[in-house]
Length: 382
Image: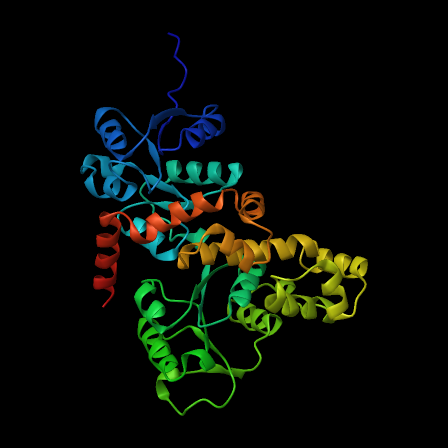
């Protein structure tokens, strides 16, 4: 008796972007049967109608979004592992999805091999949730200059999620149920409200490293707990050393940058909007070709690419936190116009700035199911 070919696992791809669905077919079709759903309603119907072994689920979709799929699936369907595949790149969004039953969370854009590894792991251990490992550690900045945020984001992106909150109200209103590993506050801009912010974070978790930036002296306030005292002016090279040491980075990552590279990253945190390779070389006292070789050796990137990535990270924050037009955002980060911003954004972020604002903005202010889920998580944390 001849046996037929082995039955391949069936993966349901639920995403409203037909281009992404086509890309996932190219990645998955060799190993899996792939079923499409263009929105949450179609995903729920497919789960109820046939055998599904794994779901790759977008969160922002029409009709029923990804959170509704997680909430509304039946008891039997909850045995099917769900991997969230989303452009929403915030810790609280991932925490909410995991709380509702997702086993893993992958952000777009993603590497093909990394996604295949997640799929294989989820199929091998379908009921074993991961603890959102791809989010890494969290560094929260409150009242800190945008250039410092952009610099830390670029330099720590392989290990950390860097979140930038401009003031105390934002810190208290947007804080995740996942407490930060490192909290950096600007005492000069927050004043006495910094004590409230730090005290609130300490109640969530007593463990975060606190780094205080500013002039003057700290009050004798027990709620501050252990901290790295006032640093003025703020230097990215110093913050990197403190963050890496607190996160137990490998010795190779703890190595101190050369004096020229340290000076370069500190200078660019303040001047990324007007910087050029020639100006950078003059500012740090190094010939451009020599400085380029140093940055490539110590950071793994050319000065020009590093400057552009700083601009893109600054633009991401401005797009989400301000209502400014693209032309205004472009001017603020030192670009010619909206078209220049769009080209740079597409190259380094894999998306157009308008699409990025719509996707991420929906995650912050859109679907009521998401808001309710986040409120539920926060309520349970108290």
